[in-house]
Length: 118
Image (tube, rainbow, N blue to C red; front, top):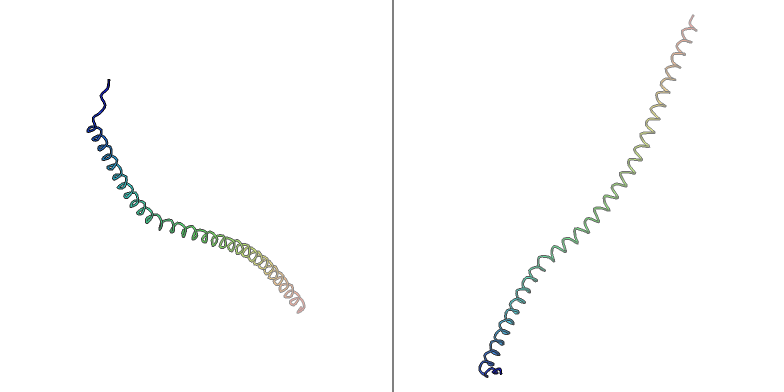
């Protein structure tokens, strides 16, 4: 047969269990307090970073839009420059042809003048 524990040893076991529970509850409260401090610090550090990230994203969108506009303006200006250069080339050719015609006309006029004096 087994002896049942004495009321004193049962009381001691119960008391030890209660002390253990109280100790664990106290540890739990300390851990929760530490967690709250760490979460508060974390949030105070992360929140400004998140806001800065949002601002950076908005700035990047604005920069991308500005870059697109600048590229479109550049393409437009390149096209206009090409057209103006072509017009200038054509005018230079026309000018050279006029100069050649003018030189030929002057030479022919000079010959007729000399021939007419004889």
